[in-house]
Image (cartoon, rainbow, N blue to C red):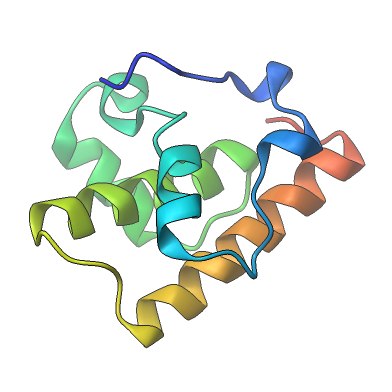
Length: 102
């Protein structure tokens, strides 16, 4: 989709924006994982994104789905969504720090 995919195994802490960043700095990172391609369909991606994320892949799916959702709305995430997005970034960073790259 975007052409700058970063696989979980290649993901470094430097790739992950701080959870304090603004949406314009977070969105490009969110699109380094193509959830539609990974899960095979938009519907499966949406299903996974709706669940409580447990793995790095699920966390990245949720972040990707948020990016696509807000792009379709042609706006930036509201405060409630940014709180979730920041929590996802924090959790992604923790997974990478710990080496849990599933």
